[in-house]
Length: 269
Length: 66
Image (tube, rainbow over all chains, first blue to last red; front, top):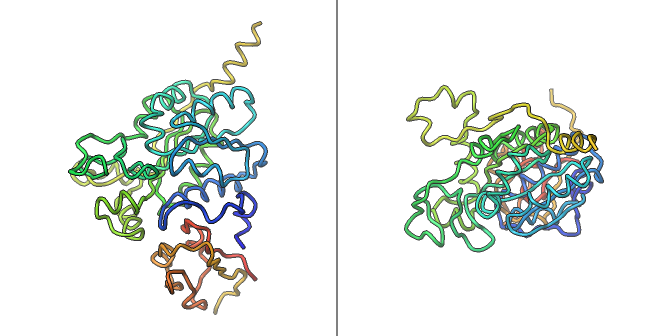
């Protein structure tokens, strides 16, 4: 037996899921479903689109309209779905590699257009499914199978990227602060425009083991200690900011939404 | 006075992978890991905060039984 929430929104015959022991993806996925439940949305009015990767397996476990697409192209498919049926609530589930590396261009252009899509990024700092290669979200100096002596690249600040590209709702949270994910996904779905929600999750199997970060509990504790609410973060000195990650609602603005603009354009003819 | 309990903690052992996240972050130390699966150590001290359910990646623990 599973809880009422899981029973209502999951394809329970697919459980237990494929994710490793201690992987945080399950926590983020439950938080998304809880947010949908809190909003009281009809299951048929939701379309979940995912790309390729550990996180993107999520769509297979959900009992909504779901599309499991090609690597990095979840936002491209989602744009088409939203355009063909603007009444759908389109939610994109993607990983850090899927969204920031191969799908980087789709991300910036979806944000630029401000199309009404809620994007939830499961950031586990590594490519988990393919064996632990470093991703654009792997912190500088950390190891991966393709960076055995440490990664020399600077990692992306995905929230800053989405904000600069034109997203109208940008937020970040961690799996320790799962209640915050629920609230942010609710806000993201309610926001008429491109919502970008980064969730910091853990990969004990590859990222944790390669970088001696300990087990799942150690990694969650690390997230708990390093994440600081944005209001408190802004008061910290530059030195204190170095190893801290701001979480919370980072950015919000009003801009006309893409499908609405398109519809008003079509009325001219 | 002790609160009247409405919801009971339920564990679905088939789903548990034994990561220990619920055990580590339970504020009342209700849970433990036994034979690589979660089990209830002391149900009487459970305050039904639901944090174990919130942070269980495998949906193996929840409040809901009567």
